[in-house]
Image (tube, rainbow, N blue to C red):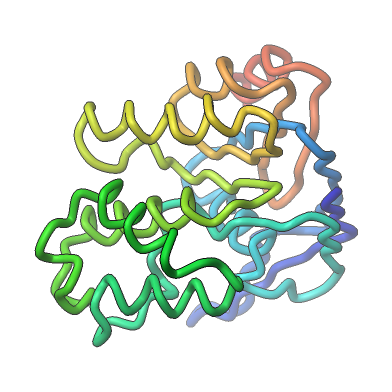
Length: 215
């Protein structure tokens, strides 16, 4: 289970403090798949980063009782001067995963070819996203955080990503942020709507969409 209790996130801007999340509480149970709906700028990606641990809340706490992925296709943790291969090796050491198993999988899945041995700072955003997604699939987690992952690569690569994530890991927990309603309707059993810093959870996806479309 993952528990968020009264989580608040405030950023300092040139115009003063901006509260993105205001006393947000929620639970994600083992195997549960939750969609997060909200308009641009509502704080959906911020919520995902907080759950992953990439950022810390301003107030409140997050308790993780299962392993949580970084946001899929997020390459912010890469060291740009290192090659793709060396970044993978480093992440394997952090997560105590087998370098011998992970490196070949990531090389094949990412389809980076010779660029796998080039510095990540030379990658396009799409290449970095493919590398990040491939690593996420090579290292197993109990809960996957998905922030518009289907936008990675062309349609063929997206289909491969969807199979690897949603079919092969259908027993995992997932938190999905997407502007594609079909993705959430297909894979989520419940959904939440984020608006004005507040999170409202609904018992079923259609009720969440009905509320979201009228705000």
